[in-house]
Image (spheres, rainbow, N blue to C red):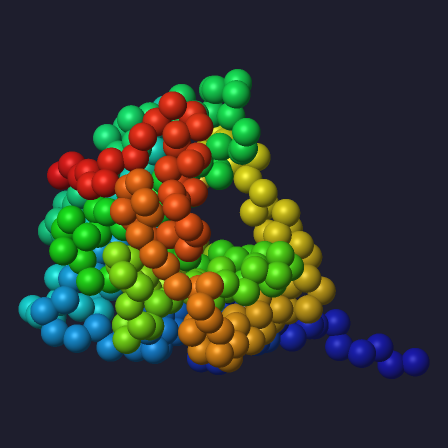
Length: 324
Ligand code: SF4
């Protein structure tokens, strides 16, 4: 009996070059050049979709120093650097986590210095009179550290964005983050929170909330990391000591398993959400009002969750605070 050929066809990029990445959801093998181009094309498309941003506007990038925020900052800088009527600034939040945040802040600051981007740092210590290390060590805290950290970060960023005159805040949420939030809100039946999710359309302003844009929301996390590596951009890759307690991890694991079995699940969740969002955004309970205590926008009545949580661990939110 004749034997078949002993060689095996090796997958290549469409240009014939050796691939560095297989996008399982599309079946495409991509070489470095076409991988970079593909990410940039999708980010440009997403930014266009989330605009228009108008003239004489300021975008503040939430810069943690991790891969997502570094890629967001640099791609927005690339997109708008020839536009004198669009100002790009960076805001970093210092949660007060020793051994973790200082290195990340420095990683972010280095990019701002290199690109000549104005950089502001705000801290929980100044805004609420406490650090995450203090919160995490309290034996009487009723929640996981991330519950306090999440609400504090939101308030810090929003206040800082208003203080620097930002019209939009760009965050580094990637496709994995976005799909996790959509899944989480669906599974909790939280339609109001689904309706409030970013990106916030520029024509639908919620009083006091600086609208958010998410340039990387269509890019899987792995692709963001590979993009930064291929570009040779340094980023902070450390893990927060309190992240092991993050509840979001359950949804991340669930989605990764679904994606492994059904490549494209994250994209489908996002596409479904984009069709649903315009239908639910007008709901009455999706609207925000000012907190009775700190004045920040909140979805509830009386004082906001940030004031309640911070107060329960001995802190107090300022109504305005910022350091340059
Ligand atoms: Fe804050 Fe939790 Fe993120 Fe750590 S993992 S920075 S505690 S939200």
